[in-house]
Amino acid sequence: MKLPKFGIVLLIWLKIILGLDYHYDVSPRITALGNDFAGVIKDLPTDIEIRNPAQLLGYRALIISHKGHHYYWEMPLNFAIFYNQFGLALHYGEHFFLNTNPDQPKNQFYRFNLSGFWSRSNFGLQYDIFLEDWTVDYPLARCNQNLNFHSLTLGIQPKNLTGFDFRTRLGLGYYDSTYFQFQEGQLIPSAKTDFFVPSLQVGLSYEREISADNALNFLIDLGGPASGFELKRLPVPFPSTVSRDELGKPARLSLFANSFTTRTAVSFTTKPTPSLLIALGVNDFWSGVKTKEENPTTTWFNILALPLGLEYKLNENVILRGGIKGEYYYQYSFQQTAKTVVYWWRSQSFGLGCHFGQNWYLDLASLSNPLVIESIDLMVRKEW
Image 1 (cartoon, rainbow, N blue to C red):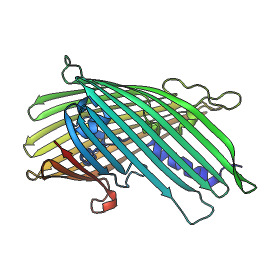
Image 2: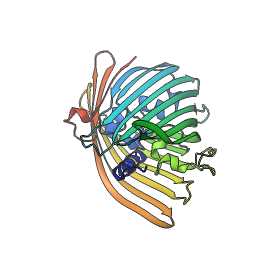
Image 3: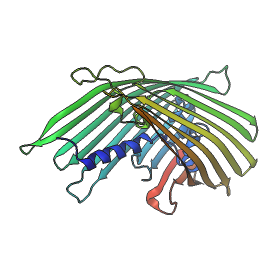
């Protein structure tokens, strides 16, 4: 039995959305200024997780946050604690899609992510486990997809190379997909796919203070995908990248999982007054895949973003933030004939930061309507 036409369209649409899910799990401050500044505007809650775990040395914070629904597949519930040399972060998200039309599929989707951190001197380690389960129910069938991905990051900040830090991420995951059909009133598995996902990524960052009020930051990541989130950045569904033997079973994957991604980001920040921070940036993300199907397809896409972020300190306790960016999207695919998709778009972000009590902070951010509570990212943190 083949998937219903609507189901195929839905799966393709969901994979496109996930394929464009190239953002990081950043703090509301970075969300308000612009996600493209992740790793190139100093922000410890963000930098420890996505840049280099060595940066947590000496940092003490308790963080509780909630992600608004503007990211359909985001982790809405987040908890983290960092204490000098050790850290722990927990993320959880769940989504249901229900409808009243019996001819259309329903789906249930959840993600669970747990990270542990350790740092000493100029070294840092991060162990990350990412679990994902996606179930789609059709009127006469069901499809289950599961991903279990582990990664280990080693970060180094050489003392003799001021401003530089390096990182290497090694990832190993397990992917399982099963398609069930109703036969005589029972769900019977009719197709099953499972394989390991090895991967490797290297990265470099550089910080330089040009003057007391001006700074330049640079970041580049090569390789991967080296985490469960990064699998969602591929331009085609990940199972299509796997080669198979004569019986249709997945063959052993190469270290880069038949795919390659890069991210290059640069930012320049300046403070024309003690109360105003202006950030200008360039963020370029590229992802490419060559599938291993009978008729192989080469697909890659590029997203180039030009963000502008502003942070204005109203007084000692209140900070206003905002960002605007233009983005250029280019996708190329080749399967017997070449196809391209090109477009520009503009987006904006808003945010507010508050300091209250003894080193307590509240940060809010929104990518859509800052007056609608469901669209707001919220973070409460205590630093000491």
